[in-house]
Image (cartoon, rainbow, N blue to C red; front, top):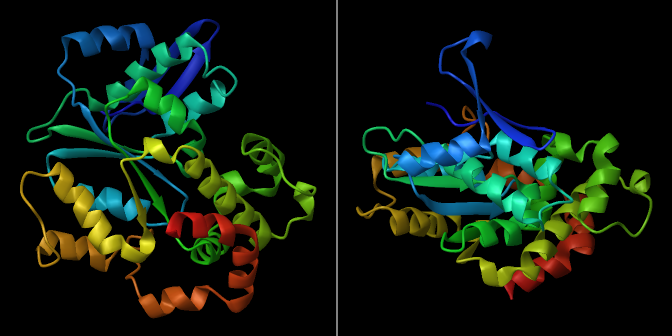
Length: 289
């Protein structure tokens, strides 16, 4: 059974949609959150073991792929239904009913464990750093990790492949969500807009730094990510492990693109670095300090 694909609200009811593997439209299945709670009561379901939050373009997908090296980990990368839940409930997360709906929705990603699977790992969207306090209230015992990176490198990556949520038409909503801007959103150049988002992401995470079990800077990704893997796995892994080496050698977001430190450095021009440092340098400095 796959995890939920979409989250819907119909009046007072919440519905979750699955697509059965290999099936067409006829294979769609719908469950209410009430039904999910009943299913979870009779189980079995994998317990959540780690939640990953991040600033975007900082190796979060790499960490997810690395954790998949251990067959005991079921890793879900930015589930769409969770993002939709937060979009639909943006103004209601302080209400008890939001928590009542969210808990079974997230836990349902652990339903129907396969052979060898023991734990559930969720990587949230970078935007969901705004909901870290809500997620902590729902799951007080699950470790959280925050991933960040030099803002100039994040901006350079976003300029190459700009995320849809940073589209010009979505700027006003994104600005409201993260606390507003100092000038009209349409006047930001794309590089400035990307830097603004990185800065706000850093600052939001800093507001809740006590909720994170660990924070890992991309500068130390190999050691930091291995520590996360070994913190979950009973068998310690190292850089000489072939499965680990394979993930690390191809850790671009594009699976067919081999990582090159030199090529990565060329993306970060002096102008991009200047803009990123002017806008996000202070907040990044607080993380480094």
